[in-house]
Image (tube, rainbow, N blue to C red):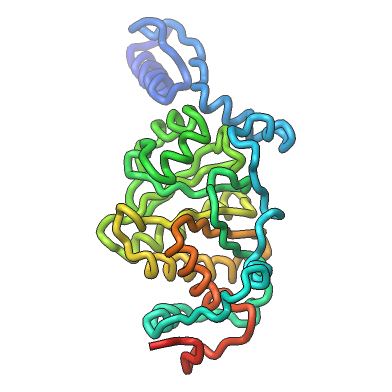
Amino acid sequence: MITPTSKKIINKILLICQNTGVLRIHNKNFCYATKMSEPKWKTTKEKDLHMSLEDRRRHYSVKDFLNVDMIDPWDSYIIRHKGIELKKTTLDDLTEFKKIKINNALNKALAQKVSIFRGDITKLELGAIVNAANSMLIAGGGVDGAIHRAAGPLLQDECTSLNGCKTGQAKITGGYQLPAKYVIHTVGPQDGSEIKLAECYENSLSYCKSHKLKSIAFPCISTGIYGFPNRLAAHIALRICRKFLEQHHEQMERIIFCTFLPIDVDMYETLMQMYFPVHEWNYNDGATTTD
């Protein structure tokens, strides 16, 4: 016989199961229960993660996708785009750069681990692409809206289950109809916080470790309507990614910086010569800087 105390314990356990989606209770006395069906986003995500690449490609919403092999690494990009090495950094750039101490012995190797991509981030077939999201994780405009449209409605369904995301943090979802296997959603600061912007990149990159991802693409986070200065944002992105690659370059195939506006293309082409130099550079006397 079930005692009143035992019944309370059973009811409490069943209530927890019901609230977490494990069980559906059929009457108030908890006489019996059945397993609830999984939400569609969850079953689709699980199926996608175990699908072969060939099968996944049949479900992409974009057909003209690009994989890592189709995008020049930084050292090849410089050769292809002649004149980049004539671009000059400023004394302010040098001040920002000195906030990081780099291991020059890794310069050659790391120049093959980063890329500039001037195009649509939703076309990249990578381990993950990063979404510049809002705190509610609701599809918005710009890159956020583009990612949601290309991924399909199940992306929003999964985002809704995550209960939002705080500034500087990051959350990961499936890629669904995107060529990218995962989407990492991060919320950039609207108040100009350099610390929070750095956390966006750090927390996004942490998923590369936890999910064993070899490639990731970043948009320009917090610039545009969030008002973060483009050049400072680029410094922060490159600084954090350089630090990450110095520790994890053997596990990473590529970090891609997606630049859409001409101003961002120009800045990344200039500043990447500081953070990922192809040739030797004397940082101390500022030989490549202008006033």
